Length: 66
Image (cartoon, rainbow, N blue to C red; front, side, top):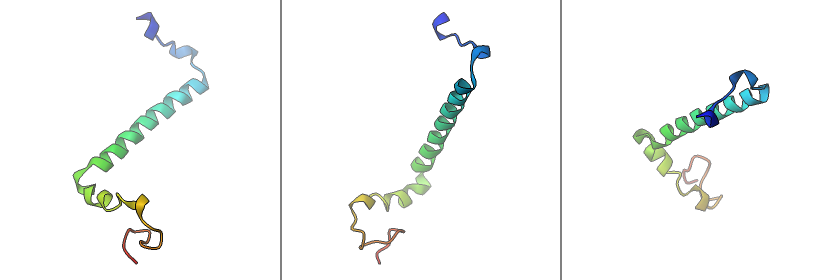
């Protein structure tokens, strides 16, 4: 268990920033996953699923045909 021990008093500012960025990144990923996988957003994301394959002049930024 000594291998997983953390000496919190010896942590520098860079260590604390790393912990904060890691936790914020994890929370941001959870928020994005919930937004994308929520059933009410399914149609909005499915309508944009072929965005990379579209010609630029065929659709405008909202995905509607011009």
